[in-house]
Image (cartoon, rainbow, N blue to C red; front, side, top):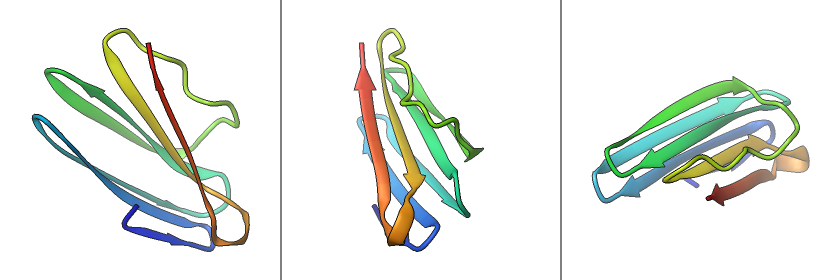
Length: 78
């Protein structure tokens, strides 16, 4: 995490083949980063309340804004 504050979260993930950044602000906002051997992808915006689903041959990272200046972090893999 590079920043956590009331309704705000930013992060950077370094992997073997590069770097992914994400950030969101506002209630219910967040980012999902999918890391694969051949690259990564990001989506930031309003997130569903559920944890991310595992994806084949990938690590999925979900970061969301939380109450009272906290961040919610979920990491899943297959």
